[in-house]
Length: 304
Image 1 (cartoon, helix red, strand yellow):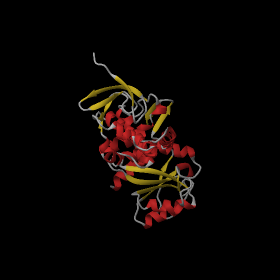
Image 2 (cartoon, one colour):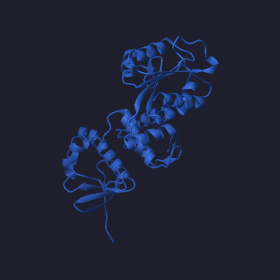
Image 3 (cartoon, one colour):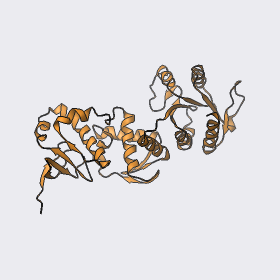
Image 4 (cartoon, one colour):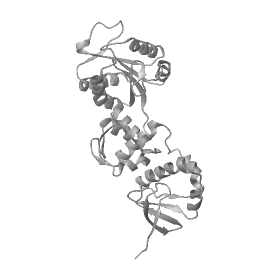
């Protein structure tokens, strides 16, 4: 019977069983590889231990996340000290909150067969390596951000990808690139925003667009973003959708700026709010978001 040692993982600090095989110590079922193991190459443990506290604090969570992602993708992972720089500079390491959030979407995508299927994340409070986060606070922020964007649903440790989240993760996994799309909705219409997020945005994703909701000249997720900065972001988009059910000055400002820069503008308006639009503006009239999603798809398909 094989005798196993017990050691503490350098990167996640879990006390686990370790065996030596093939020139490496194999750490089994720690938070870096909850359902498997990873190897630490002989001669690497001591140099890692001799790193300064600041170096460990910044590097070890990233290494733990790297191991977890690769293990979860059924890759055999062996970590060596002389590869530390290569790991930290790997293009797989996310740098922005959006890229980190995508790591969670991809994880849920790998562990489910479709949108709405529950995925239980055990020991969630210790699983910030799923998003390459440095601590639990950052992980919670990313989860809340994904919920606000309509990407995921969460009840305790049970997570579900929405249709929008599934499409986002699926496109990322296949390497598909989305075209940026700004969506202007009347300010204060939270019910309308929710309807659009749940029904219209997934259809836009299917059509190859990445919708970004904008309120009163500011991205909804960053209320302090200056109008000038948002206008610059608009130049990167390939489509602007402006709902004029209750148009504001910013609506016409954004639309005029887009048209002046040869960015296509699609107009929409609730049937109950439809008045006399300006010359040249022919909005798609809608009453239910599901109906609007169909009409937008038809209109955009004709324009291709």
